[in-house]
Image (cartoon, helix red, strand yellow):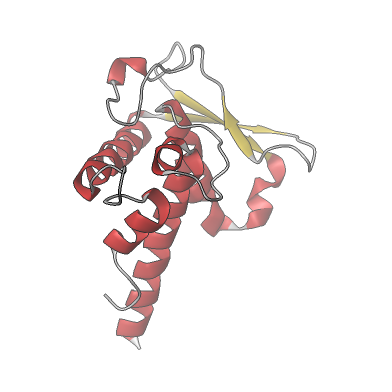
Length: 158
């Protein structure tokens, strides 16, 4: 690869392999489960509701009837909350689109990850357990992977 590798991005966002950290293969399994869940959820249906929000409010959020009782190490499909029609619901502020269309998939990944348990946590100097429990780690990882692949494709096509 021209601009890095998935392994580099995995280490950047989730650590792994260091003293006291989970091995890279464990982290890879967590990522596989999380992104498989997101893919399956997209295929099964999502309800998106647009809201008029204040500029200081969040860009998007999810509302779950019950807080999922899962961890990133042992997710359970029964714990993911859907509405009475079986849809996941993502609430989006009307001004989120102003961030640009390229930003929207990141928002959706971040919000889907909340359904699996990770929360909004600070990441600065965070240990691996916090990185794995933070929703932002997953959308950041996906963003960097897509950015790397896009740059690699653009270089190859020139």
